[in-house]
Image (cartoon, rainbow, N blue to C red; front, side, top):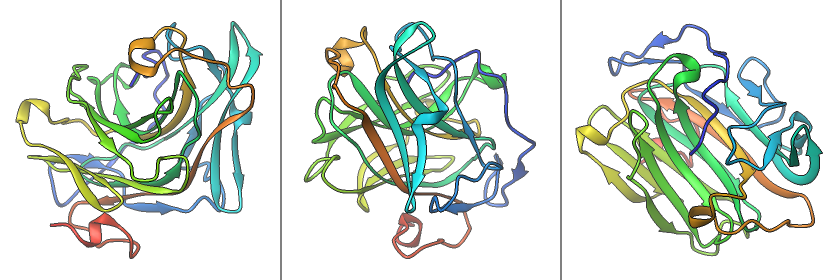
Length: 255
């Protein structure tokens, strides 16, 4: 995942988790009945770099009937021909269970993502944990992790029925000695190599963006001719050692 290195720091001082020796903000569940301004920062007016063919635009972040929608559409904003959307938490989170219930759209050269990230914008090393749907092929989701800016931990996971036809549950469980990804409650990937495990508290992101240049990864970009969307019904973070917060939570079932 590519994240703007020049973005100003937006985070307050985190609390310390009792379960592990990493700072973390408290557990939460957000069902998007409103957009909590104390939790979320909406990106607006910049891009993440030359690879991105769209400008973050806050008017493409919308709420309706408990669904958060991020949009991508043809509209010139500054020096880019398209507008796109991203939100991120203002606080950082450490070891625990991260979960999102979301549905993507389709389109060539687009990336719909749920991930955690910290990096130079917060005067920290680049650590990241990803779920990325490259919407050229909605039958799969890519999981990945970056440690000190180095990736190469990606894996493509099949999504039965596709990411665009129904809401699916995406979760990762980050512990000091392992990192596990879950899709609709099923374990789909595990990393235990200490060299491949993030070690810095991170912000939670949702984003939808496009690229004209990352064709080997995202496919050749094609103007969709309409507004493309990423929809999110719920996001949650459950710190290690804390009780699960809703019945469908991965944190209720795993050990």
